[in-house]
Length: 391
Image 1 (tube, rainbow, N blue to C red):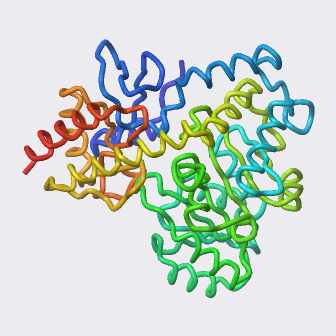
Image 2 (cartoon, one colour):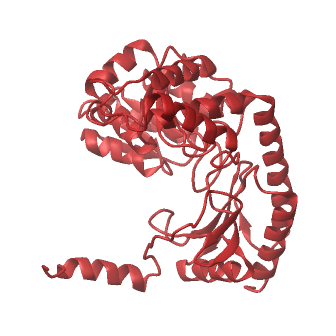
């Protein structure tokens, strides 16, 4: 076996010393509020399964039904022979739900963002992004070798000033709900800035779709936007939908352009048709009365959590979404808090740099409609016990 390069060991040792080393843990069971890690059961509060659909029996049936008729593997890219009837049905249903001309499926949200931005940006078409945008959005601009500039977080005036400075029109990009802070972007105001400066406006609403807005239509519904005011919408299925994969909703012309030039779309095997079938089932559930009931339950959990934790001597970030971050500060302290919660039976992983800025390591607590009221009481009681002991 070849020896490990010294620079690899040095980088790992540096991460260890800074309490930043990442490691995989194995969940022994489905995504659910009660999760088994090792041989112990915990109440989990770090999954993005916001509506509790990942282990829903109706979705499991939808997956099995699609697999029986269309198999499991896509077999090829969408452009060769991998675009099956479940893919087409899902694209059409999403387009109707969101009010767009076209929807294109991607294997992951990361690939969707890489594909769209790398295809639409270029050396002479810059990209302007929120300071706290997801890594995949930033990497898309890097892949395009496009000028990338970042404006102050959720600051419309900063965005407008940046677009004016850049001159040539390009792509204005933001998250809808920010994954580490849980706050909402000012989409309507950003849309107006983009229109005024003749820039394309793109939103990644991975953490909003399914959870917020009328019929769960996400951040664009909250802000009163449509396909004209938001030309490019990216959504993922691995959060509220409870499955996997992603999509881009846009116009016929832009979809045709992406079909030619979005390399992660052209050169990737299509998502499993079984997953597409399960995701269509999830979409129907999200639009149903059960979906609405789950959103209302999630909203009650959020209100209760913020009322309880807001009384503790910690920094609870300003979020009214399922993402409820508690800023701890130093990485080693965040790990200590996370470990203390685990000892009480709460599983909530500490989030540390470089995922979040240095000095803002945190508990990224996520709530789900599948949590019970008793689960929330247990969480808040445990947090009170652990966080007050830090003072």
